[in-house]
Length: 179
Length: 188
Image (cartoon, rainbow over all chains, first blue to last red; front, side, top):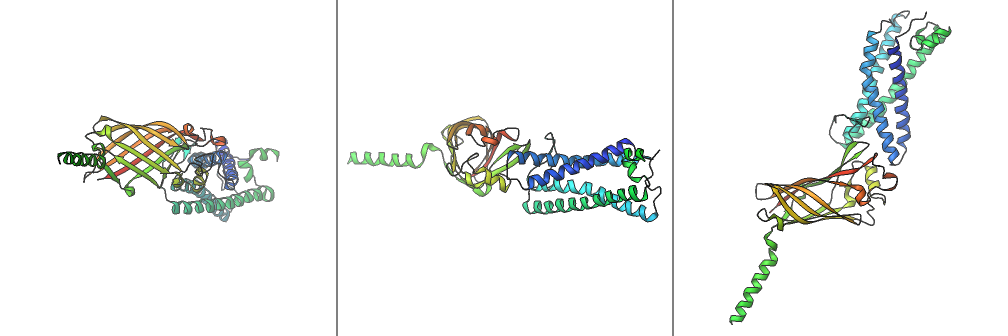
């Protein structure tokens, strides 16, 4: 039987992927819209989804920490370092991207109310110049996150199709069963 | 001669009465220390806005508050909704329709003293051509130098004035309730 992560680890990993795609699609749609009630809704949904990614991160780290799987098995020392670096930066960006978004929202004078229910504190006061800076950082950091996620997925596919070592199947157990 | 003196006396009396109306003093507004703003919820998010240009006329004497008057005129085009795209949208016909209704006006009718420093000002608010009664709780804080800080918050509904109709009518996106806030510094 192929070694795999436990279901909570797998579930929260793929949930994060879906949420990031949803947030990105919402942002892309609303960017070109003129102001309308729908645009205000999309803005809020984008913020709710992004903050959910941020809130899920401690849970993800907890599940990963409790998961007994040793992800280093079968890897060379260089590969262990490379994967640790990429995973480390992805985790940092999973904090940075929503935090920059939250900071942008605060400095633009629009507080974030998660799911329309939980008001989050304003991290900074209203300041237009600062808002522009956080907007750039939010966009820049998400582009970096996407680039690293593509690299991460490419590495997983390399393991699956070329090395055939079951690394991808740890996170996609239904792949492992077919082999 | 006596007739002329009496006439002069009455003329003087009339001119005094006209220049100091109802013993309520007229105050100078320090606009740099004053603010008229509002908070309205969008997707349940409280967003603050305000008006950059307005004029206030205040006549108030703490000894005879019921004889005082407050008049506020807002230049609607000076609205700040918190975002540039919101400022543009607010001027359109669905919202304030500033081309047809450039000004909003509040005129007090009665001032009632509740307790020390606290008053209720009842008056008419005219917004987008619609006049509705508005009751405003006001706190009058005496300032050093004899002035007053007039502050308070008034609750109103935008639907009463047809502000934000059509596609914007849905109160789950932009709330119907809003809170107007003001702080006006009056100097002698």
